[in-house]
View 1 (tube, rainbow, N blue to C red):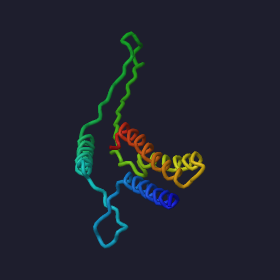
View 2: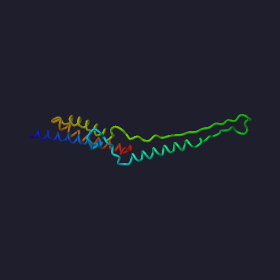
View 3: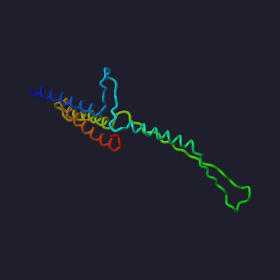
Length: 160
């Protein structure tokens, strides 16, 4: 009786860990016949901002092409001999590329995965009587802690 309760508890704990890991990867699926198509959700208006920024960069590039380049002449002092003068020109232009959306796993997802794996190993080592229960509890605890740490790192980096 006691072993069956513990095995049910360990299965539930593993399911909770899997659900927590899946929740940390917040990709939304399209409601289409093909379930493999991922549709990004633009909640902050990023697409509109990027379109506006691209238009501004294009406008600035066209405007800079129409302006004559600034030239700077460098001359020697008036005490120098005649015919010993120097002149030159200098022009610079700098273009900044638009920021790309970060790809790959977020630090929260990585933290949850690493924490769950490490917690499962440590939990199995600590609980010598029933390693499955120890692994399940350690995996859930490690996943939650790893997700929290990774989420804070993502916030600091500006991902969220």
